[in-house]
Image 1 (cartoon, helix red, strand yellow):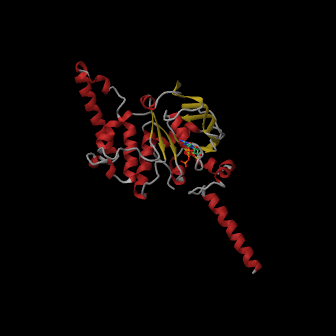
Image 2: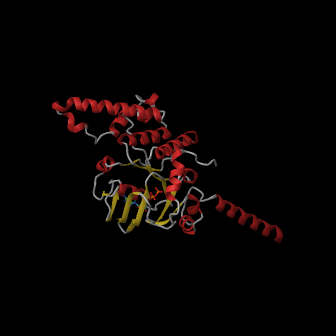
Image 3: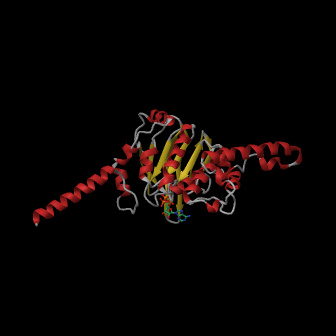
Length: 307
Ligand SMILES: Nc1ncnc2c1ncn2[C@@H]1O[C@H](COP(=O)(O)OP(=O)(O)OP(=O)(O)O)[C@@H](O)[C@H]1O
């Protein structure tokens, strides 16, 4: 795999140098800090995170087997669900009990595993909706109409620029429902950028994306880091995790069981244990594959010897 030579990659690696690979480890410049975050559904503790810090300006992957609590943690952090306990801060400001639209205004937005683009609205209308929560609605009254108009123009220009960047400008007036799965993911990412977030959280950005668009999506995620944004993403596609993440956090049964660089994490026994015994549709590492192949070869050799 070619080395990542994007401008943000070297800075991200440098900012993480020397950090211990242990769950909950403090970071030198965390944009997001959370403690004692828990959420149960009936008798099941879906999330039970003691401590988590997300380093600013880097791409962090959140991985773990199905049902580990990754999406639930995303929902809690972004105000789409309410925890049983816990607190967390964005840039040092508490976000606990802050509703989702206000979380977005403060600079943290998320996308969804199943895209939430509105099929019966055009691509442009979806983009404009991404900007709601800005000043517009308050400024509708007559004395402020010209200010409102200025803001509307700014929103349109920003939407057009983002659609061009994500190569969706030709589809601006198409219904979002006519887009492919990958294009919807791009639209969701572009829409999230309407509020100019500092921290963008992507829930399974590669799910349902065809191979041709995958590279383009990876490039877009890296470009977010190049702009100085922080990215936290949930993903099962281990190639993507290996390819673009600077840091990896591993969840299993609601807790964080490992943290580290992709190389450290893929070699971590706790991670391998977390994945074993749980149905999962992706491999863990090439090293594992080699080990499995070697074991199979040895077994065949034994069979041959016996035969
Ligand atoms: N609204 C809910 N009601 C009841 N149980 C829920 C609810 N949401 C999540 N859970 C349960 O909480 C646990 C964690 O689910 P969650 O979706 O957060 O896991 P995940 O790590 O994102 O999994 P996946 O990788 O499959 O998306 C699972 O056992 C799930 O069934």
